[in-house]
Length: 180
Image (cartoon, rainbow, N blue to C red; front, side, top):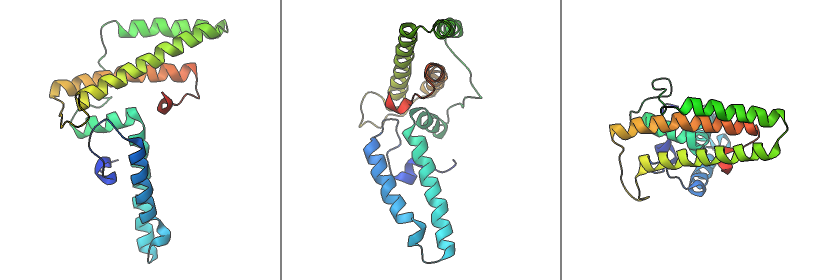
């Protein structure tokens, strides 16, 4: 999406998000842009396009990872294809955890699976919290702007975050990260 999704919905450009406010704004925009309110077919087509942009923006903003990626791109940070950096030893530890998960599945070990799910959910939350702190600082009302070093650290946190997301999806394919 090439438009500023934050401006489109009139919300502050930051990671912290009031989901209820987002939904209110999206609903108001959807009502205003509904094609049935247009005066002619050309206006209706334009409204349909704008409404699709609103729905796409909401989808990105509601998803913590999607919102973080959008913010990082807006602020000039590296994309996932441009930096694959991870902490030393991280991949090895993830391999061990995945082997534990395979073993838990093979043995139908529900306790082991639940332990790994709790670990992955905790890791997911830790990465999310780190990204929020790096983007927004410590105050919800601050005009904090991440430094170039922060942007690189955000990219690396997002790289780790994706591993915990995939782990949760492997443990329970029906899991919804919005519920975490």
